[in-house]
Each structure stands twice: as structure tokens, then as C-alpha cells.
Image (cartoon, rainbow, N blue to C red; front, top):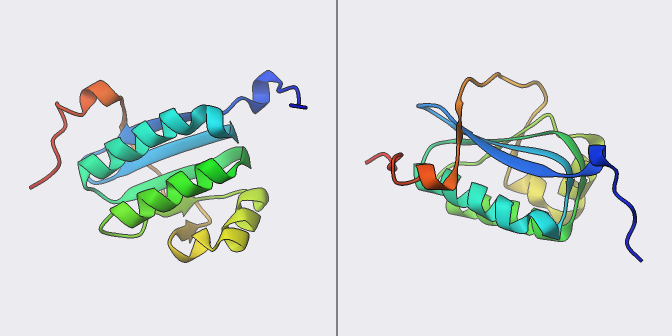
Length: 129
């Protein structure tokens, strides 16, 4: 039986872009209902071809589909993505799944100034040559 989810647990994904980096922001419960959103975020990040930060500090739950999508992101980037301030539950998952072997953990947010990026922005934001 599924459990009830309150509003603070609902997960979401967004992508921010700057001239030098891409940041994927994750929050709340990340499960199979967000696979499409997370996959789109990964596609946007890969398309940009820039270093990627994953801001996970407000993540409360992550299922195996999310872990798998983050692993695919790391495999498709030229450099290792940085995981910003992961909570304890996420550090546990990284250890159990070995995802921590392909991501750099950053304990203090280095800061980021960027603008929101959506799927329809992809054509207007070509990957660098």
C-alpha cells in the first residue's frame, strides 16, 4: 500500500544555467513519478556540455530510478558532476549503490548565479563548440 505524501514531501526538479556551469536542483521525495522531469533535466545538462552541479540538500527521499538516472548523467558528462550538500539519507544511498564513486561530494555550496532553463530553451542554448 502506498503511503500518504504531504505537500512538503512532494519532489521537484529544476535546472539553472550560467555561462560556465549547469545546476540541477533536487528537492523533496524523488521517485518514479519524477523520472520524466529528471530525465529532461539530465538531457538539458548533457546538451549544454558544461560542468554540472547537483544541489541535493533538500532531498528527503530518492528511489532506485533516481539513482539510475544520476548514474546515467555522470556517465554522459566529460567531467565528474558535483553533488552539493547531500543529506545523510543520500550519503547512505551513495555508499550502498557506489554512486559516490562517480560523483564529487561538496559539503559547502560554492554558490551559483544562474537562470532557470527549460526543455524549450534547448534550441536557444546550443552546446559549446
